[in-house]
Length: 195
Image (cartoon, rainbow, N blue to C red):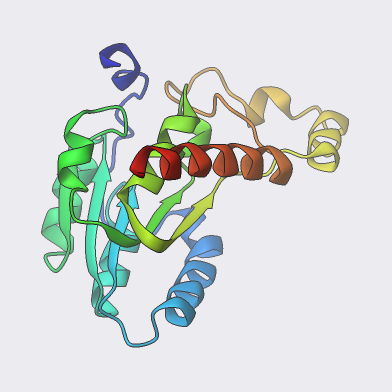
């Protein structure tokens, strides 16, 4: 697994501000967390936390948050900007991931991460293993369905959309069906491993 660990280039985090993905996803995730844990106090694991923006927001809502990411510069920014949360440099491929997540989480969140992984099933398996029984998994990834791909083709946007200049960019593509299938399969394997 050590070779997989190096599949990501450093993303060059420069600040603790929201990214464009946060603008779309944050209201949905925060709303879901409010419904699932209306009184706060949930233990939440943010896998692929980047600069810690989401983890910091969830910690400010009163949750115990642990964020993990492969980016040392992102984790350094997160630790400074969001002292109420815990942050660790770690990949889902690392053995230490199991140690960091030894205390079961009520919720695992992984936003815009699966599409960067050579083996996204490991993300799902490790996430399910990190959850307490009855816990919740929230995952997002860009949608790559027929209509979106057709639109990109019609405007000649493939070179711009999937630039080869970005090391560690999107290497897996999901539809709702394929994302659901990999999550369900991993959950079944994870649950089987726990018995």
